[in-house]
Image: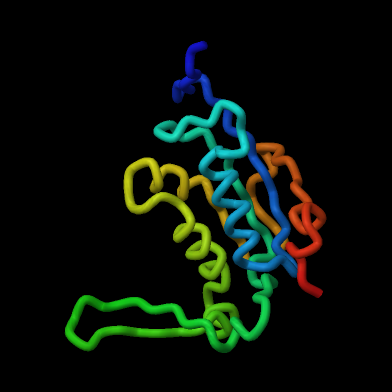
Length: 154
């Protein structure tokens, strides 16, 4: 038996559309990270980008379970002494770029900063509204909420 190792030239990337309206953020991000890495494929190779292109629409309508919308905190640091900043998911979702909640959740589930992780993350496109400009790629629609009852929150 020989172990199969995918070559970058042999990999065919599909395009997938996911509607995030009413979807739980953590479960959605875990599913997207799996698709971006290519772990859903039988020819998955850890050092080769075998994942799909993922388009997420209605990212401004994602939901959190429990009281995470108010109580969860995101931290960042400016690099200066005493420069720690914090915000909540509610402020981000009500702000100017609500799609950043989904983008950052997925980015934190991918491998840490490396060329492969940057290549995989660049195949994610997140849109706050219901429209996307990628119709020419004929993306396949994935009904994420019907995969598991816990994926959606009413």
